Image 1: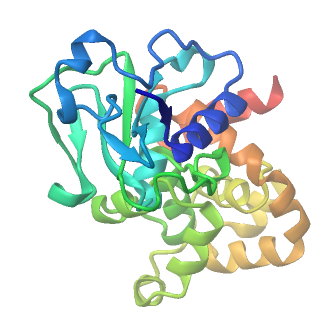
Image 2: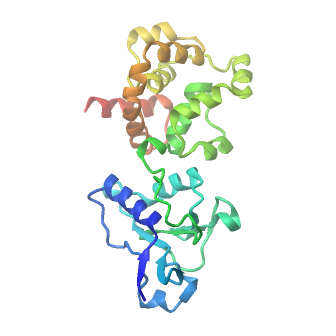
Image 3: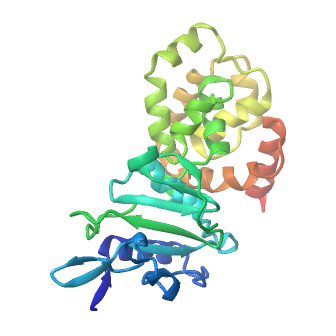
Length: 277
């Protein structure tokens, strides 16, 4: 039988290859091997679905290679956050996510561990050949640690778990714009929870707004002020800096904060060391 891979999956693979050119492809795959073939239509690695007599493989495996930067859990997180309607299901590390059955939540997977790779299956409807961009770029991925620090910069308290789950994978600027227009922002401000009282907190706000650490002058000037007023001042004065340094902030937060639990000040010291290297 003549077969081909769904074009949406070719697009996904091309984007991942471009983002991580040195990644391992040891566990990559599309068309199924003999073991998969025995499963028939139960495996999307088989071209059981046809279009004009051509079999379409609607599954793709991507090798998990975090050493090269290709962490497939983060790729999966970005796909999940985007709620891409081409997805039929994802499998990785003993878990499966099937939007049509469980919503966009991972559940335990009984059949196969899939620890070496991420399995991506797309629906066999009109979108399987849709080649629009998958939302995988670093600018679209914000992990839990980084989300918590941005929330801390907005409200002066750690992010609630329900908000963390919602915002992981979203853009930092979108998060700030949306949350600051919410009733929650106003309520927290009225409760005066936005007052900064130590240099670590001030540094977190300055770093979030500009991508640069707070100077001694800023620390003295902002002590005791409301978080949102300082954030406004910094973003209004340095909008160009905000945009230019956004990628620096995104790259540094996950690297520094994944180390070991500690206070905001301790974590910021780790970031400062990275900046100085």
